[in-house]
Amino acid sequence: MTLEELKAKIESELNDIKLNLQTLSELRAQYLGKKGPIQELMLEMKNIPQEERPAFGQRINALKVLANELFDAKKKELEEKQVEEKLKKESVDISLPGKEFNQGSIHIISKVIEEVEDLFIGMGYEVKDGPEVETDEFNFQLLNVPKNHPARAMQDTFYVDVEKLLRTQTSAAQAHTMLEYGGTKDIRIICPGKAYRRDEDDATHSHQFTQIEGLVVTKDVTMADLKGTLEVMAKKLFGDDREIRLRPSYFPFTEPSIEVDVSCFKCRGKGCALCKDTGWIEILGAGMVNNNVLKMCGYDPKVYQGFAFGVGVERIAMLKYGIDDIRSLYSDDLRLLKQFKL
Ligand code: DAH
Image (cartoon, rainbow, N blue to C red; front, top):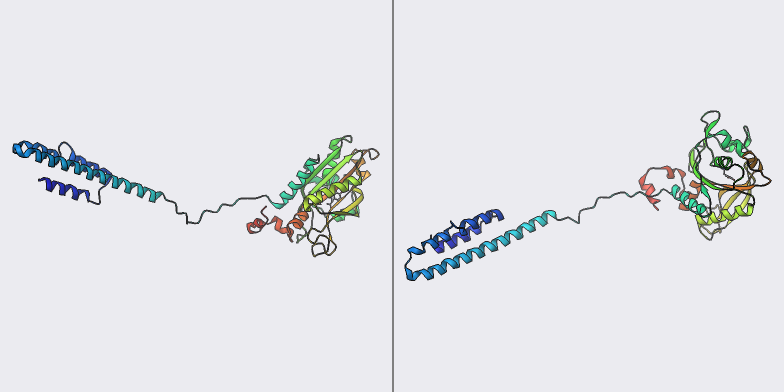
């Protein structure tokens, strides 16, 4: 093979599109290796007349350099191609829609409870728990509601048996705490939790609902303290510029008993549908702990006084977030729950 033929052959081999880095390196060894055609041409040198040898040698060398350059260039080209292909395979299509994942959030009922807990913990109260399956004694009798008392009609009850029932009010925690504290220790507690009544479920009633009970028993607590405490709570829940008003009411376990209204946060007292044009919205019941309750639970009413209050959490949540059906709060419909996402 002449030098020209060899050069043309190498060039045509390097043009083969099937070439890859592996076959390229084999090809290079084949042409430029010790037993390759270029080396063979070198060996032929001895058969060439003396005076032609330098020129011949130069041409072989030039071919060798050129072949090396060609192989290097091809190698670079193939390496670049390989990187490009790899990048193509690894590339992320940022125009594809992402995977949606749902982030949960706290439910409004829990949110209201936490807000109230925060406030009262800050004022030195303890947060108490109580059993949902109660005895008639704690749910009613110790709260001054003996058997056959007409006030029982206000709270239609789920009975488990003659003595056990599902608590109709978190007020049951009052008697538990007073007996636990033994008639000598001051009490400042709130008790959030579920309560149950045999009501027909509708937009404003649910057979299971949530209350927060509050109880303070000390030697010097007065109705003024109760009013101040409830005012702080109303402002925390409905805004700093809210006012409250107290109306006389009746609960067997408090004397006097009051119902508490907050100035309407929607119309700011002018009158609207939410406050039924009165400028006020009822939010809770409260009062000074009835002497009979103190006595039955081991506190001497000549030495100790107390105040108590009970708030319906669903009612607060509904007012605060403009929800008109209590059943929405127990729905597992995500479309609905997401609207309340806080
Ligand atoms: N337990 C009452 C209810 O469920 C609410 C209540 C009223 C609680 C007055 C109190 C209170 O502690 O003093 O209707």
